[in-house]
Image 1 (cartoon, helix red, strand yellow):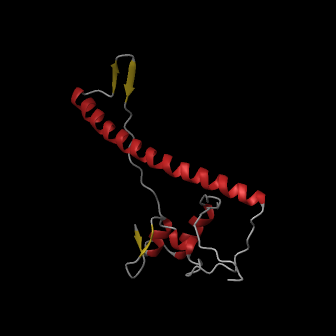
Image 2: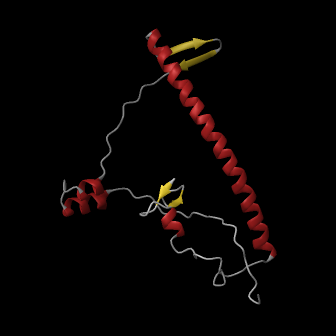
Image 3: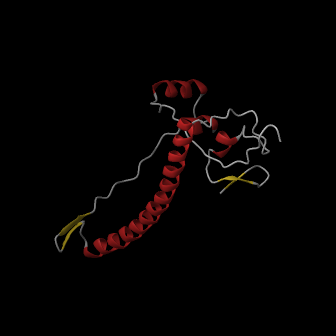
Length: 149
């Protein structure tokens, strides 16, 4: 859970403020265009169904990842005890590969801490790979009022 500067809940995502900063603070949505045509209605129904199912599956995947991680810890201890990285159990071969951790350069952090100059920071940014932007879609149930109410 992420909190705002006053300790209030702002959601479960670190980008919550970025995506919802301009969201109306009331149930007044008169300024948002309404498209209740068959195409948009069908697309929205499909999107909500898929989003809901995806959310459920993500929760299940998270549980399986956690269980897998727990099992890997136990397997690792067993392999360490047997002083090996490869075993055959029944018809299954299990091989463990130990991957060393990496050190990542974080130029922005180094610049903010005064460890590199602005000129060096700009040069690093010029040669750095950048990811392309992407879109996020959100849904929120609202209480839509008709204009004549």
